[in-house]
Length: 219
Image (cartoon, rainbow, N blue to C red; front, side, top):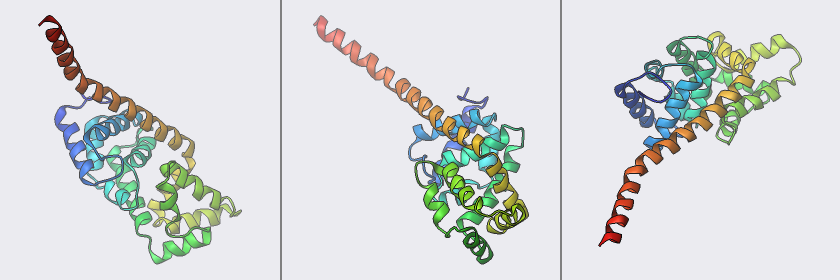
């Protein structure tokens, strides 16, 4: 049984290999990747097959293109799936949003400029220690300077690809506290899982060392 979900080895392995192939940050080695996958399953109240299907939408590719970490993507997924929204539907909407963030149109760049944000500003903040939650904090700090709520929503919609993608960003902004919680939870749980895996891998070596020491003492 996989940690954090009711999946078999096949589902976990497929998710692990697929995620590592995208070269998204955080997936540099199999142990770290396993920790992140399983902690995302737990934070999002998903099963591993659901996460595998979500990753199959291609959500990680635009995330990797703009410097996101798997922890960023996992936290965004977990915010929605923990509320009962389907993982694949959520991933598809997020993929569209991340695509727009990675390669904004002329109209989107103009809207970002009106908000007071340069094309690379959100990606730059997101690559820092606070990840996606910090990037959205930065976006909110700029939006708060626009007093007209209708104008704020219009600019967000234009900046992030129209009604569907814009609505996804608005949903994340409204769930920003929850996004911070999920982000921190995934990071902390992933570290615990990684530590457990490494300890399990070390146990046979430790037993061999003890046996060798006992044998040497007996000779």
